Amino acid sequence: MDDEEAAQARLTAARLSAEGVVGLALSWVDNAGIARMKAVPLRRLTEAVRLGVGMSPVFDVFLVDDSVTTSRLLGGPGGDLRLFPDLDRAVPLAAQPGWAWAPADRYRQDGTPHPACQRRFAKRMADRALSRGLTFQAAYEVEWVVQTPDGSSPTDGPAYGLHRFTDLSDYLRDVLQALEEQQLDVQQIHPEYAAGQFEVSIAAEDPVGAADSTVLVRQTIRAVSARHGLRASFAPSVQAGSVGNGAHLHLSAWRDDVNLMSGGDGRHGLGKEGEAFLGGVLAALPALLALGAPGVASYLRLVPSHWAGAYQCWGLENREAALRLIAGSRPAANAEVKCFDGAANPYLAVGGVIAAGLAGVDSGATLPPEVEGDPALLDSPPPRLPQSLADALSAYERSELLADALGETLFEAVRAVRQAEVELFAGQSAEQISAATRWRY
Ligand code: GLU
Ligand code: MG
Image 1: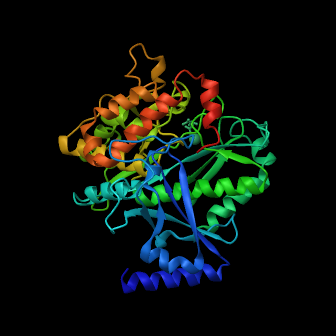
Image 2 (image 1 turned 30 degrees about the vertical axis):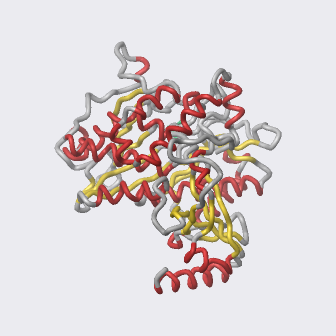
Image 3 (image 1 turned 120 degrees about the horizontal axis):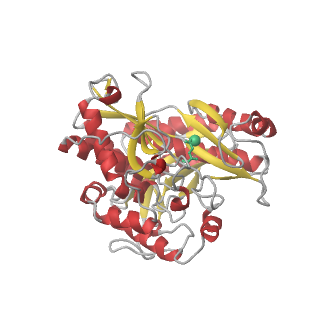
């Protein structure tokens, strides 16, 4: 820790203390998509910034049910890692008085980066793009379902309806207020389609920032829900057979302050490089699903005609396309990866998409003809994306692009976790899978 970091730690501690904070929660998201944490008392903040906070590397091979597998390079009870909070993101938690939160990067005890740190992977991919002059604006939409502890819905109001908004008026106000107090730039909040489902959108920021924000948004919703005697589920499938929770990733690529998704000579104003980037993403979607739709339950959600993006195609404003182009005004134009869900580790998902897009730029990829309307209704529909985690895992295992981007340790850990979850749920019914994962994410 240099003098500047020590000074930042002292200033942050003073700032948080003045706001009544007694402890700082450090979180990271594991390969199963579960946000995990350790906390330190605020008086230990400087020490945490200097030395990190201990945590076993075994969490890289934890499964959604907290059982543990091993990968070729990771697993077992030995070893230790250090969690370092990113103080630039440290913020008092509005719905958890006395607590503050910061995302953490993971290092080895010898001070070198942990090769399986997912947050550093996202940063590495953003840096890889930056070295080619590309930057991004990214945001995850957060969808969630609220239920009472006995599993009933606190509202029977219709989708997108004022009725549902009225039933949960105080709850939604508290969610909105807590998010805004935490400097999250809320764009909109509304009831979604499924029973008791809502959605919030946050303004776009850099890729790591977008992943950090989605962790904080979800933690805030969790905490406000608890204060209202409710539970929040971000799981891909809350009720088997019904619409699930997506975690759509919005992304625009920029060169020299110009948005490559707009103002170009291509279809709907796409620039050549913007199209190549999206062409790379579209081509890699089957493998990317192992990062963005990473659970067995993800495939209960990823079905046609549920606005989940089950087909490997793109389309202008097409909510059934896995890649939806939102032309919008020049600064706002972006592409939405719709096939990703709430089980995804947001750092892995955004890092994987950037890696795939850059590969598309390198190879001069192009987009196939666009799809209008629901692809399920076409005489010759575009390819279906993988229909099970096992199929997505096969595509992932064949992806040299993701193997190179993730690096061997992280690539293998993800592979081991996916394989073990396939085995964990083998032979189980949709209802059983949904019930076992509903409250995990
Ligand atoms: N809930 C849908 C999903 O599973 C998305 C609905 C929407 O388009 O916002 O992704
Ligand atoms: Mg939505």
